[in-house]
Amino acid sequence: PGFQWRDIFKALRLMEFSGEILAGYFFKGIPGPQFMSQAAFRILQQKLSEDLIYWLNASDPISLCGVPLDDLKKSFPRRVSSCHMVFHGKKPVLISRRNGKDLTIRVPFDHVSIQLYYCSLRHLITRPFKPVRNITIEKINGIPAAESDYVDSLRVSFDVVVDIKNIVIYRKP
Image 1 (spheres, one colour):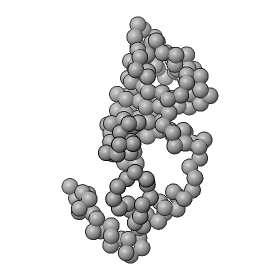
Image 2 (cartoon, rainbow, N blue to C red):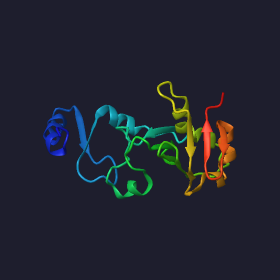
Image 3 (cartoon, rainbow, N blue to C red):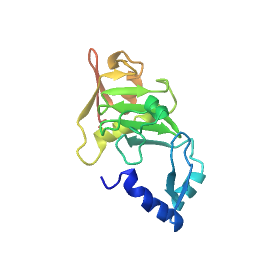
Image 4 (cartoon, one colour):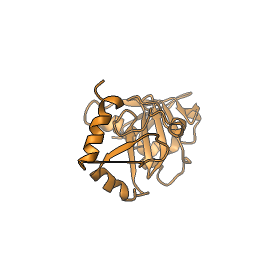
């Protein structure tokens, strides 16, 4: 409750007047005043590498998932810890919902970087703390996973078992 806009706005304005932070219009499509540190402003002045591939949990503080902006609602998943997004530069290329059970992949199955886009799935089964034993993928781009063109590309990165509808992926030994 202490971090509601009405509670922190006065403190942010005081920080702006003292030079600790900047106020302005930094991001298009976000209404109202925006604040950021001077260090963050310097970082934003640098161009994001279009070659950078990274993933975020939808509930990560830096994630914009769940932010009530029309442009984001169309292309970002709900802000829950079972959702992950993979980006190539600024472009979201893979959305994993329900810890990998439902995938939306926005590139063709034979895309040159598809193996790199499976990084969030790879993390779930290889992370040092409580890795999952396997991931059952039920749907890829809205169709049963077993019917998907992505099965062969998943086999490159994971041990794969295909049943009637689903794909189960395991860590490669």
